Structures are given as C-alpha cells and as structure tokens.
Image (cartoon, rainbow, N blue to C red):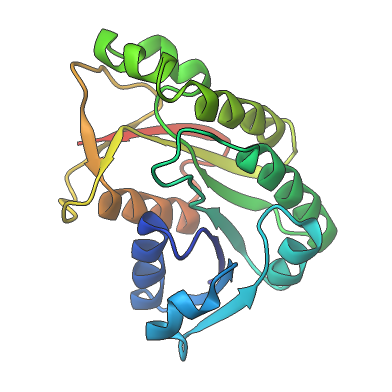
Length: 208
C-alpha cells in the first residue's frame, strides 16, 4: 500500500511510520522537518512541506492509496487553527489527486464523543483542552461532509507506554475516571484502519 502520513515526526506518527515499514507499505511523509526521519531516510520518502498547504499536501499525495493524519499540538493547549487548516488542505488535495481514503486522528471528547465522557474527563476537556477541541470539532465537520471515505479516530488520554495490543475499539465505549491508551496502540489502530474497510465513514473510540 502507498501510504501518506501527516505528523510522521510526532510521537504517534513515528510509531505509525515504523509499523507501516514493517508491514511493507511504501511510506511517504509530509513534514516540516525531514531531518527528523534520518534514521529511516533510506526507506521513507520524506517530502518537505506544510500539512496546512494544499499545494504541499497535493504534491505528497500524488499516487497514494491512503492518507493518515497523526497531526497534533504536542503539549500546547492552543490549536492555532492547525486542524481546520490541515483539514481544508487535505480535502482539497484529495479531490485534486483523486485519493478517497482518509484516516484522521482526533481525541476522545471532541464533538459528539463528549456526551459519553466521564465527569472527570468532561472537566479536563471543557477547560484545559477547550481551544484545541473546538478547532478539532470544526475540522471534523468538514471531513464528514467531504465525500471522502474517512475514519475519525478518538483515543482517550495518550501515554508513552509500550503497545499492549489489547485495547478496545468501538463507536461508543463506556468511560469511567480518566482512561488511557498508549501512542503505540493508537498507531496500531490507525494502521489497521488504513488497511481495512471496517471503519470507513465511522467514528472509532479507542482505549485500554
């Protein structure tokens, strides 16, 4: 499979790169910092560019089968319109290049998933993460109405622990307290979703 990864140099995206390479995918990564992929430079087509630029995204998207976005804001609590701008660029580029399949990493608590969050989660989402979640919600409305074969992935709180491979996935999952999932397991789900059809035009909540 020809796989374009956005956010490939981030902590979740880097796991995804390794999984895709191990699976034999042909990996292209659109990144502002191609040097960050130096360790796999001989196996990844690292394209220098900006995920919020339709021109840059279209250049990297040419010939791809699937686009997976693992874009994030790291420890920042401000979105700076990253997700809305990236969604606009990706949707436009996908239509330009004729690529239909998009797997998009979000966060549990965004949009309709907020309703099923636990009280502890709701406090965190409506305060510290309010700005980022609002921007993600707008971006996802655009993705849902894009006509693409999208999958929106909603992991609970991310950790840096190892992959367990025993995480739960469903359109809705019961929540208690503040559950977590490792970035390695999130990357595993993103990769599986990209290779399958089970989650096309569906929301996927994932947690340990």
